Length: 427
Image 1 (spheres, helix red, strand yellow):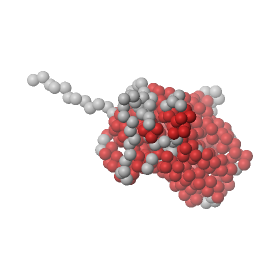
Image 2 (cartoon, one colour; image 1 turned 90 degrees about the horizontal axis):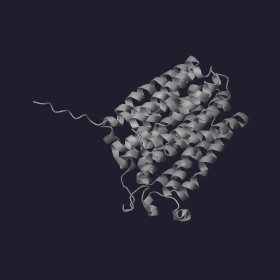
Image 3 (cartoon, rainbow, N blue to C red; image 1 turned 45 degrees about the vertical axis):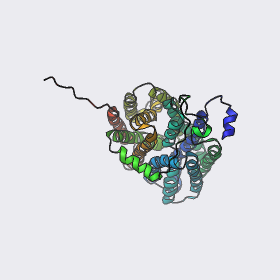
Image 4 (cartoon, rainbow, N blue to C red; image 1 turned 60 degrees about the vertical axis):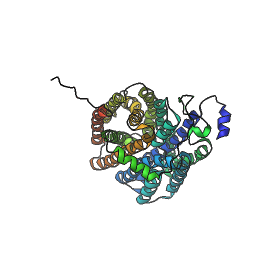
């Protein structure tokens, strides 16, 4: 990697090249996570599996994706970012390729739920938090926004293409494309991703020039790091406020809209490609919205930002069932409004976690918060599938999801609030 540093010749800080590599990793992982939503209808037609059955595999995937976060962050502290990522990407590519052979629902649960869910959980938001806190002292909100936006860009790049492949060539060709995308980023991680700025004889971006060049190494067991951090953080009120607000965030994004929107569009006579294109359009707006959110979180109160994000998202979800019956101000308006807000909650949430728990503990704490996010997503993926199977419509699920967002808007105002000092009473 020193050759890469010599190649850029000091024209910019190596941290930005690290961000670019991690962005591509997250891009591939985002495309992998989005794939089951494209496969839902083809699998239903070929094997006769119900949406509730397919949603079970997706919910396991989403839950493991979140639960891996704190352990992945701890493993990166103990073994390093690069080795941890290489193992995860290899498992991801192998699991996706292996799924081309599945013929039974339990195989989808095992492969897409366990193998792919666990491996994508390493290439997730805890990775972003680890890289941001290691490589940047300033511009953390902006960089976190850029990395978070990779999930939206992953949808933008993959979903319409995958939906078209599924429609014309079948779902098995889809998984081969996704497996190849996961494999392509492996050499980038191997050759371009150092562990610490100190390994390149650099300081984090924005660190004073007289600050010592350091590399932080721990010999502690990753399980001890993850559970020790949880034991400490769980004794504080702010942890549970972050956890439950992010639970609702996951339920209203990955779990509901990310999993079921394409199938929901099918209920209204739209094709899979049209539904995927709608998601991709939302991804374009989220790319701008989440990056802007990172910029804003460097400058404004994160609690206030989150209040508006959750409140506006809740209103847009309540509007969604009515959007299908309106032309210009229907789905296009929803795509813009919801897309700008999709995962804009991440940068201010990371900022709050760092403010409360400090630079060293924040990635692992945030990993546990992301676990709450994905448990919420798993809850919504399965719950919405069951509601659709029993009621024949997604309307009730949309209203529940929107209502939960309004609850989250109130919860976040209590995070990291300074304790009130009693005013002395005059005698």
